[in-house]
Structures are given as structure tokens and as C-alpha cells.
Image 1: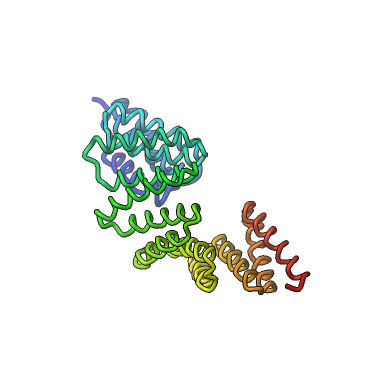
Image 2: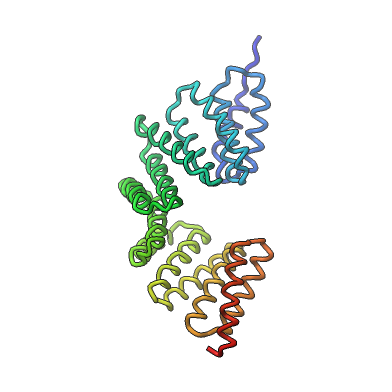
Length: 307
């Protein structure tokens, strides 16, 4: 009598898929255990596809990008055997995000395009299409093609507004704001960040709110609205502290130091910079450490000048 795949194993795979974003370590363990069992079931193509997909997403969330690519490619191979167009699109989108994380932008562009094509030629949920458009917007941003980044983010935003999903709308608005800021259109950037913040107040985590406050603070500071910028950075610092995010607290304090320097309060700026620098060194945040040291050097120069 042939072996029968148990319902317990199927449920284990389903659980791994459900939690691979939120609990990647647990999902990885469940998927790996399931794949060991599935070695005895050569015809369990869908179960293997789902287990590899969950494992790939978990590895991506854990920054194991090489392993994530290998597992997602395995998932892709199995979904191709099943001719499951929506799952193929999901996997292509995940692969593209993985490529982006390792700056393989041409491969990411190809995978996102493939994913979008699969979604558009099937009866896929519109949010899935919006997600890929959003991801393409992010990719064009990294490629410094800002007009096309805005085009894709606006397209995603229109779909999300039609669906009425506040979380997705807020994300699209935030992404648009980032592109506007890079183009030095700070008025548009500040307006979209403010819209995003307004929506986020009812559902977002402290860290998500703090990130947007930092973005808004940077935009309004560039417009010369220094008091508003300081308020944004203070709000961000408090939210990061609430969430126990020491890296975020240090970034907010560094931003406050720049505000103090702008207002001629160089002693306050120095204190902030020394505090943030200590955290950047502790967490080995090399880029932020260098930027903090540069700002600190300029602050010492101002103090010596008596400015």
C-alpha cells in the first residue's frame, strides 16, 4: 500500500506559508521539516512548491538572499509544472524583491515584468497587481528614473484607492513622497507624507509612523520649516523609543542635531551627535557613523568660530 501524505504535514506547510513574513524563523523550521517528509512523495508537487515558497520568503526576511533565491527557484519550477499562474506570479514577485536586495536590478526588472504579466492575464486580486506596480516604482527609484517611479506608484495608488485599503494607500503615498523628495519637489513630498501620516495614525506600528515622521521632517526642513522639522524628529524619536528601536532613536537624534546647528545651537547639536554616534558605533552602522562624524566635525568648527 503506497504511503499517504498526512493532513498534519499539509497543515504544517500551510502554516509555514501563512507566517513566513511575520515569523520567518518558525516558518523556516516548519518548511524544512515538511520537505524532509516530502522526499518520500515524488508526486506531491503542490506541497513541495508551497514549502519551497515559504522557505524562500523566510530566508528573504532573514536576509539569507542566496538561500532565498535557491528556494524560490525551486518553488517556481514546481509551480510551472502545475501551470499555476497566480502562484508563479507570487514567486516571480518574491524573486524580484530578492534580486533588488542584492542590487541585481536587471534581473529584478525581468522578474517583476513576468509577475505583472501573469497577474494581468489571470483573475488575480487587484491588490496583487498594485503590489507589483509599487515594487516596480521602487525599482525605478533605485535606478534614478524618477518619472517612471512616480508613474508606477501613482498607478498603484489609484488601484489601492479604488479598493479602499488604508494601509496600502498609506504605503503608496509614502513611496511617492520619497520620490518627490529625491526630485527636490519638497512641497509635493511633504503633502504626500502628511496624507500618509494621517491614514497611518489609526493602524500603523510606532516604527512605521516614526519612519514617515523622519521623511516628513526631512522634506519640511529642506523647505526651511525648521520648527515643524524639529517637531517631526521629536515625534519620531519618541515613537522609536516606545518601540525599543535604538537605531531609529539615534537617526532621529542625528536629525535633531542638524536642526540645532541650523538654529545656531551648536552645543545642543554636539550633545546629540555624540549620543547618536555612540549608538551607531555600538550597532556597527557604518554609513550613519560616517555621516555623524562629518556633521560632528562641522559642529566643532562652528564652536571654534564662536558662531
